[in-house]
Amino acid sequence: MCKGKFLPSCCWLQSNDHDLIMNAHMNMRPARSHRHPSSSPPARQETLTDRRFEDLLQKASAFFAATERDPEAERHAVIAEIVDTMKRYGLTVEDLRAPR
Image 1: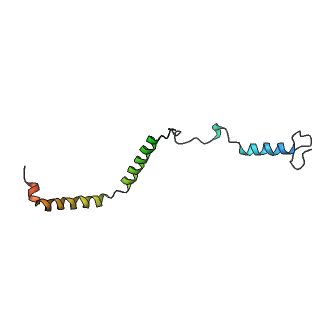
Image 2: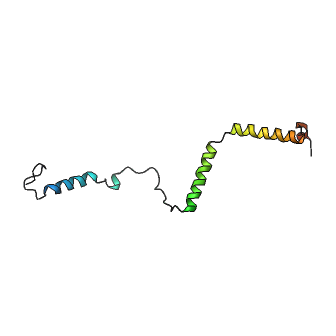
Image 3: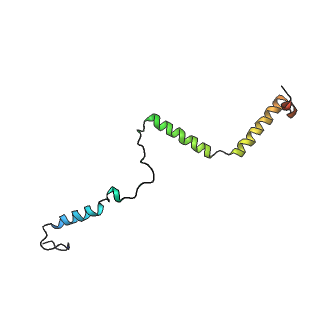
C-alpha cells in the first residue's frame, strides 16, 4: 500500500516510483509543436578557431570604434591640421583658389 502518495491501495507502484514519475513529469518539456516558434532562424554554429576569434575581435573593435566616433571633433581636428599646414607652407586661401 502506498501511504501518503494519493495512490489507490491497489497501486503496484512503490513510494519512490511515484516520486520519480512525478518529478519526471514536472521536468518534461512540451513537444516541439506546442512550443512557441522562434522568431529568428537557428544560429549557425561555426568552429571558433584562432583565426575566427581574431576576426570576430577585430570586427567588434571596429564596431565600438565607429560608435565612439565624434564627427564634429574630427571636423575640427581636420580644419586645425589644414590651418597648421597652410601656415607651415605660407599658403593663403587665395593660393587654394588659384587655377593650376
